[in-house]
Every structure is written in structure tokens, then in C-alpha cells.
Image 1 (spheres, rainbow, N blue to C red):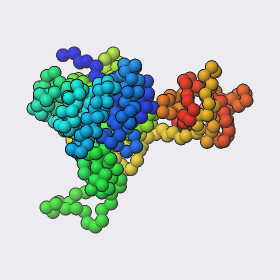
Image 2 (image 1 turned 180 degrees about the horizontal axis):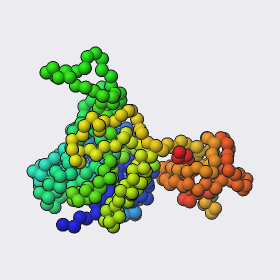
Image 3 (image 1 turned 180 degrees about the vertical axis):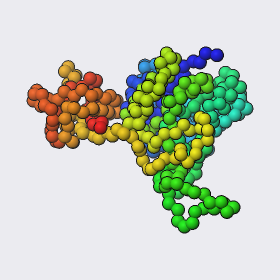
Image 4 (image 1 turned 135 degrees about the horizontal axis):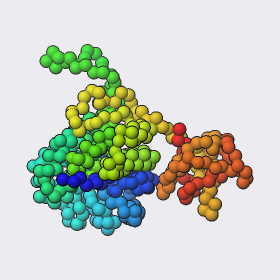
Length: 402
């Protein structure tokens, strides 16, 4: 059977990330609304923003999926019903859910239901039962191998399967965890995980034992997995028949979204034009290392992860950093020049990133002027005119990429 191109699906947490995803080849994006998102700490959209977001995506031929996959209580059902009604009015393409009440409400409003990985579907019988309930796509449990995914896809006809292929992994089964709730009273299953698992742990006293067997713990990030990366075997991902490949990233900056989306867009296309190669993989790996990562793992795709798949330290191992150097004060559209107030010194031999609520682009060629005279270096605190390739807006931030 000839493979078809999978949908490239990207998680976003703000409009800038949505622009980055669209510009770099996403076929669809998923996002949450405040209060009912599995990533509910500072990102996500207000319900009133849904129409604007979905319209932008549809204008660019990109599908829009609303993630509403948290635990929902009785007292919240009216609010959820209202959100789904507005999602229908905004023409959202599907709702990612895990709660049966949300499934019922989604069907009531004529919305297409996708089943979240939070439901942890890991076999064909479960997939078939959810299909009977009207689910159109299943985001499979993260704990499946490629072989198991292919078997489920083969066994259950006329239902789409979706899998995560890049981004953060959770130490708990499909992200169902109580550690943050126990430690801080903020539930991961309500989208408010403070990620205590990502922190360093230190043993107090003798090593733990079970039936006289010692458990040897190496390092201090003993609950923090490395990030998933599948780009080097993406030909095998496609051969498994996966309908949609998902990039995790709703709490990541737009620059991360741009880089990762671009790499996986190129990987998908190269498999189908038969140019997928070790040389290209090496180039993609170099780009992926530049943005946020905790080191990389193949996840469960070929075997159960081991201690080698745990992060070696807290925080990111990215090789590229970004630092804010200025803020846009004015934009002169006729000459495509941004007037920027510098908060750090700047030279014209750097790569810049312009980002705001409705702005996202990078440029490596910098032409700077003060009083219509070319300059190579400008000190902190000065106003400088910078030639830009795209429109910017007042109060957009200017970052230096190093």
C-alpha cells in the first residue's frame, strides 16, 4: 500500500506561534482556551479570540483544532458548553478531548471529536469502541512502539491515528500524573503542572531497597525524560501509516515553533520526493539542537526507554540563545524601516528576530541608519532605523539570536 503524506500538526500558545507554524509548513495547529487546557500556565487563547485565530488559519489553508482535554467537573459543564458553542461559530475543525461529557457536548454542537492521548488508547479494541462513539481520530498513547501503532492502524479501519513525534515527554503514562497536585496543589490533569519532575532530586540516607535489591540512581534529574525526536527515522514513521504527526509546543516560544516545524516539514516532503538522507538528517539535527531541548530520545518507538533517556541536567541544552535588544517605536511602511529603541548594543553583523502579538520573522541581513547615515554599531539607549523585510508593529520586541 502506498503511504500518504501525514498531516503536520503543531501546538501553539499565542498568535506569534501561530504565524510561525503557518509560515514554516504546518498543515494544522492545535491550541487551548484559558481554564480548560492541558497547558494552562500563562499561554493559550481567550474564547473571544477563537474567531480571529481560526480565520487566520483558514485563510492560510491550515486546520484549527481546539484542545479541551482536561478533567471537567459538573459545575463547569455550562462553561464548557459555551466554549464549544463559540468554537462551532468560529468554525474550529475538531475538538481534542478525553472526557465523555465533553464528547457528548461536542457531538451536540456538531463538532468533530478527536480523542486525546490522555485517554491512553493502546490497543485496537479500545480504538474500535471509541470509533463507535463517534470519535474520528485517536491520538494514541505515547507508550506504543511503531510496530504496535502500525498494527492498530491496520486493525481499525476508517479512523485516523495521530502520534507525537517531537517535544517534551512525561514520566507518567500519557501525562496522567499527580505529583504537581501533591506537592503544590496544582493539578497536571487540569493543565497547571509545575513540573516538579524536571527538578533535581537528592536522596537523604541509604539507597532505596526492595526485597534486598538496591536501586541505583545516577544523576539528579531522575524523573525528567529527555525530549522526543524522531526526525532521523521519519521514513519509518510514515511507513507505519500514521495520519497526523504532532509537534508538542504550546508553552514554547515562536522561534522554537518555527525551527521545529520547518525541519519536520522538510523531513516529510523529502521522504515523498525520495531525497531523505543522512546528510539532511544531520542538518536538521543541528537546527533542532539550537532551540529548547533537554537532550533527545527516540521515546517508545523502538523499545522501552531506559535511564539513558533521562535528562542529564535541569533546563535546556539548546545551542542558540535569544536576547532582547530593542523595542519597535515606529514603522515606516513606504521604505520598510523600523525605528527601534535599543536596550542593548547592536551591530549589523547579527541575526535578529522580530516578534509581537501579530508579528514573527527572522532576518540575518541588517542595514542600520541614524539620521539617514549608515552605521555598523549602535550603543544601548539609541534610536536606530533598521531595514526590515516584513511589516512590524509598535511595541514589537527585537531579539538577537546568538
